[in-house]
Image (cartoon, rainbow, N blue to C red; front, side):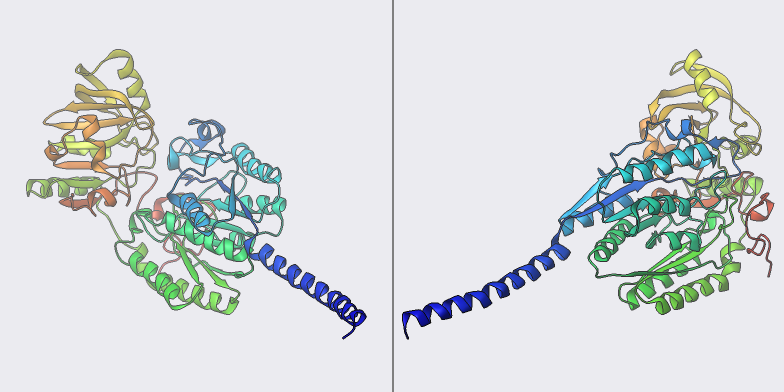
Length: 516
């Protein structure tokens, strides 16, 4: 072959090969950009469980009592955000952007309707921070679901809508508490919703992890969230919703069975929060599938129908009132089933004295009220007494109209110091009896509170807790409690929901309006 011929062949091969290589390189780069390009996901939280029957509204002052809103929300390794963060770290190549979020409100669920001013400040604040965040591929919102706001009867849906208006058509994933009151407006606004399945709440981290996996797969084009939402029409008090007992246990087990049987399916059930007077109150079923609306609808119908079938067992129980419940607790203590736990589940403001007064009237000994909210008594003791002083003082009985009578304590100051989120006082009186005073409602879930306050747990026969179900993690699941009595003392969180002055809930919901 001549030299000119060789040159001609090389030139022609170059003309063909170089474009082909360029095309291959371009397609290769495109594949990398879709699957391996860095992902930016914004993370925010705005969470509150609102007891609308409580007397005091939740204001900006309450939201900022523990500090102003913060972007420092990505430090936890547990909880919804911790679980979300962990999975993103496992995938790699993901940047999480902390969005300005309010802290927990003072008093927790003892606060009533959130003011419109507060809601607008934080929801629009989240939206504006997102606007300033630059390019985003997704948004994760750790909400609660039982928030109630003056002027917005479906606030979580409104939060997502305000976020959507800013970020446009990118995935928005939401996690909720088991007590959420929601309906289709939330699932219409968000791409996917994940709700915890356990009460006490052990799976917040798991649901955050699920939200992250679906988020990442959706951003990469491997998942197309498709949702179905149902409202069974059943409302239950929180004290009946513990998932360690039936039928709450079976409802959640049904959801888990569907998740085991079907690939890429997430079945969520919220039992609802009966003490928020809102139109979407009560149980909610939310199902997420990968682009399968028919499957989502079938599963949602099945779970919703089951909740309706077990409505009588779920919502129709009865609990002892104050006198009967205290008598049963004393009887159990005398029989040696100590410590006996009394769950004063209905007290939503923390200052109810009904059970304390009944214990004193019956001459009970070796008992502890853990805790009683009384900021006024704490202030008085701080200014007039010190540890070891004898004292005569009225406690409790004023936090709401169901709080009962102030109870006179003739005893001694055993503890006066900072503990948790405020000053705590322990008063000792009678035959080894104690009252722990706190400035806000405190739901004690673990016996670990007693030792730091100088109270010997082994010396107690009866422990009274302002708790519905969460106390079971530290007192029942550990085998500590010898007996447990859930007592339906007066309060804004009764087991008998028909006594509440509802105005906004559906007129066909069981068992308040619709009967068998």
